[in-house]
Length: 452
Ligand SMILES: C[S@@+](CC[C@H](N)C(=O)[O-])C[C@H]1O[C@@H](n2cnc3c(N)ncnc32)[C@H](O)[C@@H]1O
Image (cartoon, rainbow, N blue to C red; front, side, top):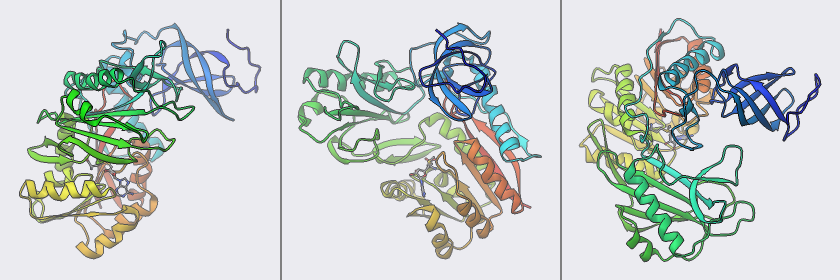
């Protein structure tokens, strides 16, 4: 039943509204208007008429989740899999690309008030399914109470949608995940209960070297007993790790990690580099598209062999190392120490001897880096979704590079950062979106800012 709302009456949590979806917001939710309110609707696409349940009513807008599609958008296609991680699977792939390109351009024009840049065609994904090299599942129970792993149901932090054949992971990765599940079931292990904070099994992280064929498995549990030899026997992988974490948050980044068997890092190849990746280090989750992204960043950097290159937020060093042979020197900065240890090993492994890597927070360590290394000619930045703080942008401006190559996973934070650089005399010359995450609303792009 939909609730009749009088004008100015704010919807309450749990109200069901009938809505027509006009557009898609950044982040991928459908946008509808109801009685003067904007409602962001999870699971809806433009042209849908839906019944949606309000999950978060706010003063000026509400968030809601689709309960029923009353009239499907003419653009809708049948979904491939019941999978909460791929909400855009109901849009044809060409349309997904079109929307992503539009959203990048719109963010730069509307949020950044930028103009005069070349908006280059979006680079489509090599694989539109089974492209991810890293999966992070949560353990839970199905309706029959059986142990499962999968993803959180949209809008439900405690409910897990079971996924045994995840269509964005490779078949090999899924085989290994199922081996872990079968073993845990055979031992009668219990999922961690997110309400009561009891139980053992929290998450399963499976990483794959797409070029090397290696598989790394990390089981995340509450502190407790685990028959590690039995687990190692049951799971066919190149490295098996166990993380024990007793916090209440849903994270795989914290806790104490120990190696159970095999190697504690994963080998991979990217753009001709051989790299090692530690369990807690970031690596682009789509290897094939990381190669395209890095090649594009290299083209934008336009190195001639004489430049001092900074790679900020460098992770395991991959972007900078792919460019190092065309630079005079490379200086990388990254927060996570094991990632920097990997970056140093990766330079050595590939016989790159003009690279220097430091662990530190860009917000405070960039100034030190300039003192130590000298000012850069070219700066590559690849920050997390929150983008750069105005202070970091200011420090980059103060270091006066000729070019800034900005690799962004969030155009809404790229836009104000680029605007600040433009305000300081840089011009935004080229922008290319790259589709790293088909079937999802996530957008990656590379932007080139040049000193005027
Ligand atoms: C999007 S990833 C990019 C990594 C790398 N460029 C790559 O292509 O694999 C962002 C990286 O920034 C690091 N990071 C996050 N906040 C940071 C900070 N304040 N200072 C330095 N590095 C940070 C993260 O650990 C992560 O490795």
